[in-house]
Image 1 (cartoon, rainbow, N blue to C red):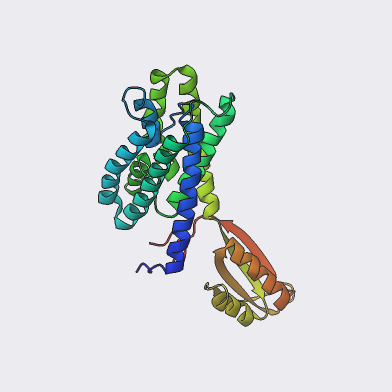
Image 2: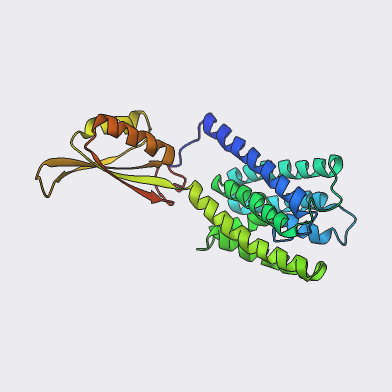
Length: 287
């Protein structure tokens, strides 16, 4: 049964989503729109359509996001839809405000490669945060989440395939240089999203060999609010009785536990392994 989230967890999620939206909007408005970079997403479509329609890219982004949100509600559920509505509306409103009060008539610098890097990294990091919290930036991210839900494809590859046609179109709408920049941006964006999600999901798997497991387990339960598994063992050299404690937790929690063990039992042996995919109660992969 899926556990209900506490008010503090909701506040933390929406605070993270808000920061991610701000980073996303900066990347799109300052670096992507002025350079006509179109490596996917609704904003990529908006860049293309702006050349043919009497509307700004920000307005086109808002309209297309609203249409795709309906699709998201139908296929991805209520919780996903609420978060994505928040992200989509906030990002669209911020883009409109920037377009109205901070108009940009051209690229920020005369270095397209430098601006391409920021146009890739900022939205990609934001998208990874959205996916981590079961949301999205709207638009084609919703389509990618649907593909991921109903197939074995990971989110980075799904997003790459969904956005590929948009990037290729930039070649024909603008010029070869813009098309090549857009295609390179799409490939780099997919890699950045995959790497950021992996790091956000990173947990520590600890194997602790000790003589006094009770204080360690009590600290894990009461201070870190995690669980553990213990079983008896015997040292092959000394033949002394030992206890092995197995536990999994976030990185900050693992640091606290290691410090406690060093103070409690300096002779304990600790093995720490990184894991980016933990499936079970209390972790992001549990459903």
